[in-house]
Image (tube, rainbow, N blue to C red; front, side, top):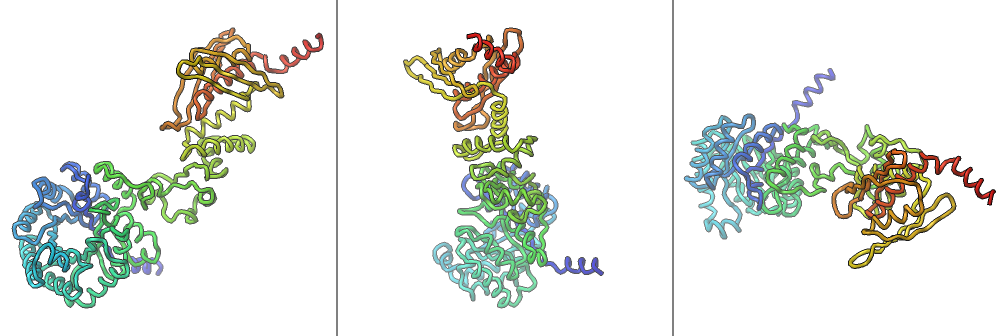
Length: 536
């Protein structure tokens, strides 16, 4: 019985068709142009994504668009392929020619209907517009079995006239009526009410698909599209990453995830979108068009599944299997690898501990606290701390835990004609010692001063500087290798925002290893020093 009820519930869902116009409307935005091969690549990926309709282009606009629509209609299997056309005989014929090679095709015609467009652009009366629309749909219907009609600027069209146009184009053969909010002017409650009223007032509308096409000029494209669905629309026209003219269109990824995430909507509606293909499709469109996705973009932005706030990170870590506390969509659902915890100055100890554990570090409470304090110093100067920088901080703390000599003070004077001079003070237990030295450069001066204070014989074999992460504010890392009198090699590594300080830390670590391993810093050395003091 339970299985039967489940099947019955699935059958009762309303299927929402996803009409993707990335190759047409999105390509019209500045910088969004694609080559023929790029369009084919995107079209095949849209088919894998599971869209119902691909608007492949505007065949009449250019030979390139004509060829693109022709090739996509012929080669891309699965979705219905459509081409856009003006309400002009030559344009309709050209579009039909481009679509003729495909098996599942639709001809999409549009005509402005608002008073602003009728009077300012078309310069035609209501009667003339009505006649043009019906005649164009009838012509398209004779050439291609499936026709869609769009009354452009529908949300600013007088309602009674809009009803007349919709009724006439359905009568002429349109099986899909698209209601566009061409300028993104409508508010969600207005747009939803418009769809509802059209369903109630157009007598022959029950037999056709009602589609919505919303622009994002006021940031309401997705909300308006959803309002249309809630009031009876069964097709949503949208683009990948919300691209499109001006501020763009409703974003496909947002529509699909809203209908899948909200339980009350998921019970009523279904799409054919393969959610795991969303992120891959988004990245492909971004790479091909060169149009960046803002980091905080819903669903596909780089920060969409990134957490840095201590409270949020704590919630995510505590509920790794139940992340609904701070995530309503799992990143894996749309094809992303995992939630990203971004380490910033606001992340907190638990976030740092969690990330270190993921990197394979099991620190004691004291080691963690010391690393965290150094992390805060770095994070206050950086937007975020990378894994490489975090590991470098751990290595530095491990170095400090083993050190015999510690850097207590460092001051360097250099530049122009000034002879580089370094003042270095080292601390050993409760004692400090200081030296001043000059050199051919700042690092050379620092190393000479340190060598005066630690008189263990050695030779510098190698000195390497690298950036832990990109940018001029990156954490710098220095690695040195020294050789003692017996031929043993000791390495040291130091990191700091200041490369001279990092150099001093690396040299000190190598010398500390030399001193410790040679016994100069151990119990035997301390006993020798005490014996010398007693003799004196």
